[in-house]
Image (cartoon, rainbow, N blue to C red; front, side):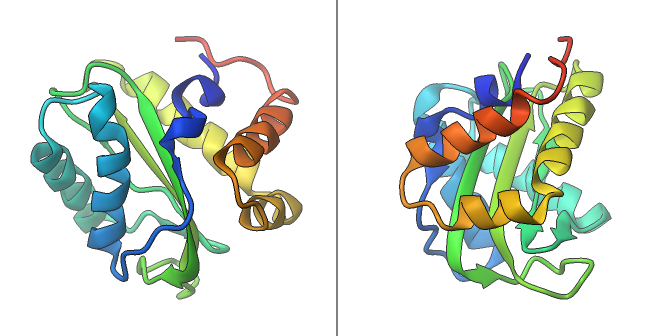
Length: 158
C-alpha cells in the first residue's frame, strides 16, 4: 500500500479555515466523511482527540499528524489540509502547524497504521518538500508532489 493510495486528491483541502486544532480536525473528518471510510464522524473525532490527549501530534516544522484507529473505520484514509495562517497544535517546537495530515484506520491493522505514519513523517521531514507543498494551490499539484517523493521509497506491505 502506498501513501498516495490512501491520500487521494479529493482528500486534500486548501485552505483549511478553522482557527483551532479541534476545528481543523473536524474539517478534515468532513473531507473524508462522504467517502464511507467510517460510520460516525463524532466517534472518529473523539478518537482523534483522545489520541491528542496522550501526546501531541504536532510534530514540529509546521506539521501535525493527528490520527486514530477506530472500529468504525473500514479502511485507511489520509486527509491533508493546508492552513494559510497555521494552527496551534501544541507542537513540540511551539510553532503553528500549516500542513495537517489526518490518518484514520481500522483497529485491527496497527502495523500498517504505524508504517503510514512513518511514511508521512519521512516525506515531510525534508524542508524543500514542505515548502513545495505549502506553495501549491491545487490538490492535484500536492498529490503529484507526494507521488514523486513517495516513488523514492519502497512500497508498504499491507
